[in-house]
Figure 1 (cartoon, one colour):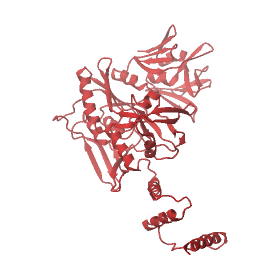
Figure 2 (cartoon, rainbow, N blue to C red; figure 1 turned 60 degrees about the horizontal axis):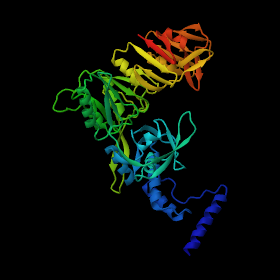
Figure 3 (tube, rainbow, N blue to C red; figure 1 turned 45 degrees about the vertical axis):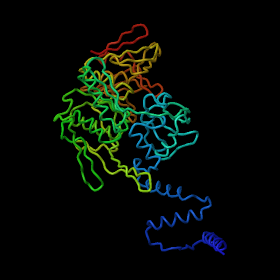
Length: 498
């Protein structure tokens, strides 16, 4: 009889759906859906749907759907396995490939790779998109699900399909391995300039930073380049600990404000029983880029607000929100956005990022610019090696520096050269112009055009700027206009500005 009733119910629905103008009413329509409605739908779907879904899948889908309505990529449900992996990543020890990611609109994007891990050895780069794992498309999957698929037992293999700007999609085969992630590394560059790189802010970052900073000072470092490029953030308290090496005890490092307006200030800490920072008045440049995120932004913002450091690089990511991880009694955890943070000058960077004091968008050029800045910023030397397509700026190799020669004219990469010479370079697509700006001087180039402009005054030109493979190149003969001298030594081109 139950089977007959069920079939009768299905037939009734089918009939009602075919009757124009007849609108069935199965329940009171004025009630707002609540938890009872959700439970009722879950039960009905599990009982009646032709796919016979299991309850665990339905509940997880309901949780993910609830979280999706927040339109917040940083709030997520962590399964017990994902929670374990999250804690391991903060602790610095896990099995995986050594890649740090951020959620994207469709696919997750690589923020950074950890040195000497399968990902770095395979050539995965910041900015790469991971679009498939073992041949399966992962579009619109939650970041936690992607991480779960990438992690696995040591020694097992996986295949990632990578999408990279300017290249066709390609596969990389990796073998999972134990990953130990020291978050701080450093060295002394050229005498008295110390260099420290922080890959993320984990539990041990504060102690690691202090040890390396002390070693660099013992070796004679009196100026510092602090590299926060590609740093995805992490925990607030290690960022406070690092900042407390420079910010006066008791001064605000960051403030956080919750959803009802409650505000809490986090202050610079007292270190080793001292009433002042370990380092006071040390000239410092902080390197940032579009992948500098979260806790890395709050620390860079505090140093910028107090005038303790000059930010060099590109606009930062703009993640100005704070997440809490709340363990659930049923297992797993809820990682949820609970507040926004503000710099000491009450700047919110959420969705905006930090604007650098010196804009440098050429990849890998900012360390050379920081070195020049800390040494007074007056002189610049750029050396192009045409045999190796390599360029060295202020004694620091910055990788490839391609040169074109057309009709006996030599063209050099415009952004690289002019940023090295101290200009802020921007491409303004609406105006179709490349703009190079320095105090009291503004130069506008029109790629493919027959003129250029200096401080608004137009001059005739003969193709000083070319667009080749979506990159701008400036004719070598124009560089003296920017105060630079040029000489050729075999296949080497040397550009100097004194």
